[in-house]
Image (cartoon, rainbow, N blue to C red):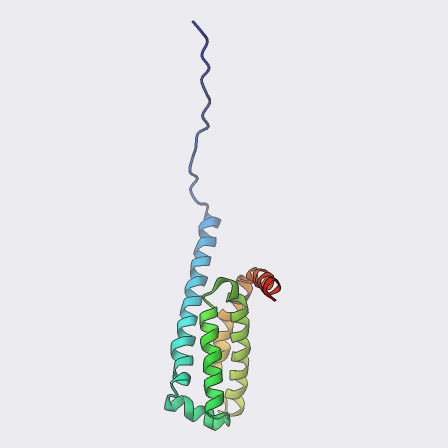
Length: 150
């Protein structure tokens, strides 16, 4: 009889996700949900009334003194930010840009509208700052793209 060797086949086990892995996944999903909700808010509740010249938006921008040009410009910036929140390479930059827009909105609310609704932009800055920080790794990707095509 010849001696036969048996091949050793390593056992493949599927490890169950650890608590920290599940936690990180849940955090990523929660952040993505927040991004989608903010994008919908900026596109539908904030930009759309400006872009269709809804009377409430037009009245506000007339009171500010910016008229329809300012209203359309801010609406376009909000819509661009909303879309960019959903594009991986732009997420962090979009959150930073929308935060800057919210700082401006806060100042306008304080100075022109006597603080009415001034808390809204501040509340929106909180999740935007979280997105900007959590997605900051994408900034290097964006920089590489800009350098390559610039």
